[in-house]
Amino acid sequence: MSNLRYSAAKSSRISKRLIGTSPVKKIQKDLKKILPSQRKYAQNLKKSNAIINNNPNEANTLNRGSGDEEPLVVSDYNVQLDYQLSKNDDIMVAIDTILDNQWAESSSLHFRYHKRQEIESADGDMEKLVFSLKGLSAKVKAEIMKYRQNQLPKGIVTTAQLYSIYESQGNTFVDRNLELNIRNGNLKKFVITNASPVISRTKQKYQHGKVTYGFENVEVVVKTESYFKLICEEIERLEKELVDSSMATSERIKKDRQLTSIKKFFEYLKSNPASIFVTHEDFDNEQLSSLVSFGLVTLTSNHLNEIESHQYSISYPACGTFLKLINAGRVWLVKALSKGKYNENLEDQLFKKWEGTTLNGDSKMNNFRPPFYGYDLNWILADSLGAGVIEVFNTPVGRGWRLTGKV
Figure (tube, rainbow, N blue to C red):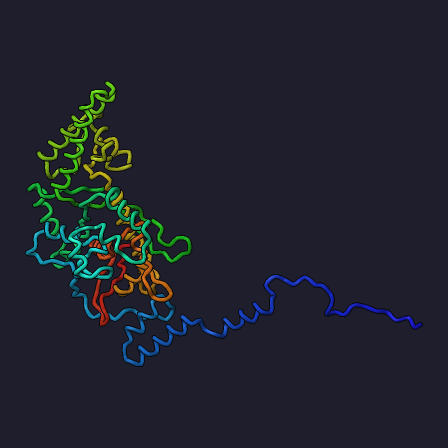
């Protein structure tokens, strides 16, 4: 018998395959380098058709955010916004315009969610309009109503929003009319110190949208009757509680002092309609402590020298919730516009980003979820325009918005 030696073939040897060297995955990876995605192909096809149809602005719109985008074609800066008023319209009308159109589903500035007839037939029934929205679960709708009715203070607008309504008349026109109505007891202004972030537009990763330039003051306005109604309701509540004969003596003394403090504060407001601050000369420590607990006054600043000056700002209870909403809107807008090469975009595109869209092009209704709960984008744009954060201009295909150098 011959001495034959057998050894395993190389193909039968067991070897440990390196991670990521699957032949199927390698082919898929190579194909991705060669074949464009369906979305990119469709985008390029639309762009080509737009160029063929001699509509370069449409082609530019499709390129928003891509490396080869061109700046929007500016027709002029003589923009008439849907909510703007003339100098003959009273500033009280301007405030009503904002408040009547602040929620997207009931706004008369557009009809993206309900038809005009549906809004008119609802006759101001917010709950009816919210629960008839399509694309939102019952839980989300309930959260919207809870936020609007129980958390967000009612009747507040920013002076920046008013500036945008009377943009052609100038800020001085608004300031003068505000001062006149404040002294006549029609309006109440509140200055919230260090309340609005100045948002950075840095392109660095992990730094986008960070607050790097500190904070600035915000002025908000409310109708005096709304503010006084809120204070009167608090007085009535305390008076009813004091009727309870079973209340402990210590608790009764505390509530009685709170009632005295609020009544004194109410009289002070009626005698000093233009006042935006109070000091220890007006109220003692105990009274100020009570007013702070009810959210009617706050410390003007966190700076030590201002704390030692014992100056307190007159405030609107839960005003911070409203400012969080406005600030979140500004942050969103700056980020949305900063994504483009020229820090600009068309209004229609901004509304689509505000809502979010599915791959099929349907609205995700993101604007009805936290932190906006259906607040209309028009008033985020108005606030930012009045604050000088953005500017608006006309293009051949609609209004365009661009960041200014303020942020």
